Length: 134
Image 1 (cartoon, one colour):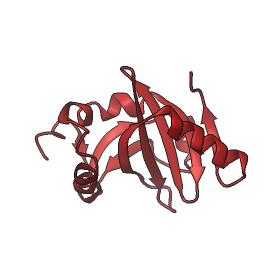
Image 2: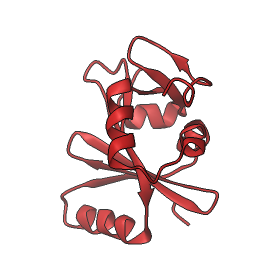
Image 3: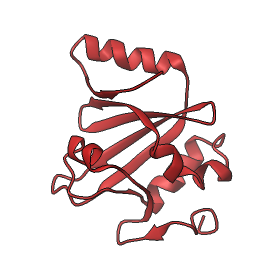
């Protein structure tokens, strides 16, 4: 695992895999712009999504930097990015104190998942916070 994430700086929570914009941090109610992927979440993610290859994990900073859609779904913020003709779905969760943003899940996605998120928002069961999907 360390080899895959060696390009990323570490802090007390895990690997800092991305730095998001201040406006996105405000949407997530966070005092920081750093997105952290904890070792426990990485292990869980690799187990549940073996289709995500090493080279994709090495580009998390680029992928998350291209966030196109953010939907608040309960305590989680579901985000979608399009990168190199692939769509990725990931969950970001800010701590209550706002001192950390965690990447809790990361996987490939399809258009039908995005449509499902939008329908959930239409029914008032989620809230679209940002939508720049092409």
